[in-house]
Image (cartoon, rainbow, N blue to C red; front, side):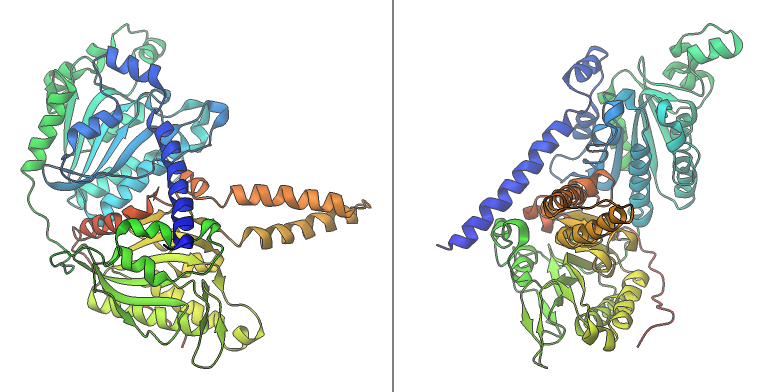
Length: 542
């Protein structure tokens, strides 16, 4: 029995258990009372709609569940950003689904709602996946309209995307199951087909109260913009249904008739189970990620058995690169090695740090994968690039720039999993959010920041103490320690995966044992887009 393995396993299972408890609360949306009101109106909740719509024998991977987590406290919170969304299958066709959660502020759009919905459209466009909108929203959350209405990445961008996606040939289906008000009314009408549910579904630029105030006309919602009005009078909608279930069944019929997409042609063979069970992944990383571990052990829990062929195994050892298969899909893996290693020159190298040789190797490997049209998977546990005179004199900035260039200009799909640390320029070089991964996920053990908490806190403390002393204030050791502790607590709270996921820096916090599944589904999604541009790097540091 390996006691350390068991200790690690307990800690990481506990971390995932904590995440699940937070998710259970998020899944309640606006609460049980709000859900009961939905039932009184013969309406399903957003999650029930998705569960009814999706194929039961295929995975549904939720994205953005933590959006808005611990944000908007003054407004009463915004669980999951007021929408439920993700990748699922409808009538065998992989697609994106976005469902307004009417139990959260009547489905109104907070700033994070706009960011989340735009991210779902971005995923649809990048992977040419059909998208389904299940509409039930009161429109923009008026108390925060200045943060959601006018800018480029705000509310209006959704409708611009509707038009662009249509031009790209991406199928968009909208089912109006509740309110669809003001600017939001354009979304279903700019989709390919619009379905409405009688009695609950309504579409109008201005509701009855605003119409009364504006022009003095008395009219009820159903007559103004209900299913009968828009199917028989205005011609805006295409179908009407008595129940939500009938409406969702018709979406399934539409999807069953979609033509097959032209694929990217990423290679896939029959899958084999990993050499090490996926559940063993919990026992590799220590609690708090304080001890070295072999990244190859994590890779063995993810890839098909005996499929990993390591690239330049004896060179640049702090980054592991190699070709493998995940659920049969060919992939190129770029992963931070957390063991302390020794180079052929006799230099001891710290795990999780990018050195000149490892940056050079990873850049070359990324270029190879682009040449071969092999999707890339990044496994991040990186504290940054090596510092000091030896690295600077050896050109670490030049070699780092080479790696960043290769990542930025890569044309094959990139999927990033943050398993541990994701600090500073290491985040960039290992394909952080700024470098357009098709999907980016985090384990509960992830930490995302410009640098580690202790180093950052000491730097911030020095700045604060110097500022106080410049004003003539003297700080004793006890007071300085108190300030340091406060800075560490504040800084650490901002490095958690929950803080990152709340702001959509990552698409979702996942069960480590589900890593293989999300990678496979991500490549399946990416394979729907056959448009892969020519790989060019421009001016390259050598």
